Image 1 (cartoon, helix red, strand yellow):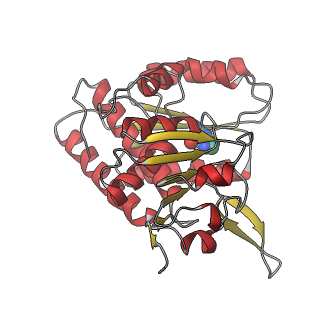
Image 2: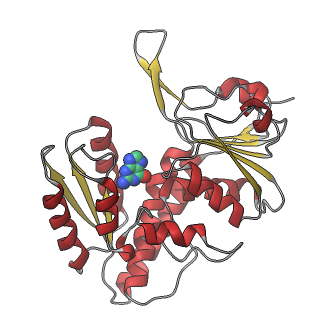
Length: 300
Ligand code: GUN
């Protein structure tokens, strides 16, 4: 069998960013408020700083307002809640993103609950979690949907078109990725199974998958012989591992070379799901600004 076709997340994300940029320009040209994204980072985690910088930079590139809030690691929950309360009523802010994880002294659930659901561009507020859990098959996603899962479903739609009737296996059951991905696949008429660390025969389950989404956070965990020939594989993992030259390299949760020899289509790491996450955050911010201004949902 020839190697699987690569799913080019960089290219699909660039096309989405460009459509979002056009949507922002059209909104502003009609006299509506310029969409604004506020990012909040508590503490100095290096990876989180990189992510937050990239989000702010991309927002500015697409013509959005970008408001960067950095708080010290000892910030109290009350102080963070006070900032969120201000952002909730700030008319220049349409999207609020609180970077996770938060320091220990802060209760993440309480913080997510405090964000105005209309500005919850991460889709982590229980109201939006509930909307996704109860969406009908094929109904519009006219509420914020978590960015990485939305990115996975856009990559699948771009690769496969209809997924109706496909067997989909999602490896991982986190609130950030595994569960929302499963709900999006169910909405797309897949037959969905969530596998996880306690699943009895995970390799056997994966071999039933026409669509295999892996978000388990373990480097190269899914091997080539777990993949059904011709399957579409979406690898959400980003793991830094030691490389032969004493440096480090990024690998996914799937053993790429092995899986590529069997799959029909596969995402690389990096350059697969990663670029979609930030592009979907921009998409969510544009949609939030439109909704807050009373405009209808726009498929971009
Ligand atoms: N940390 C890791 N992924 C995410 C994400 O999608 N959103 C936020 N806010 N924090 C994260």
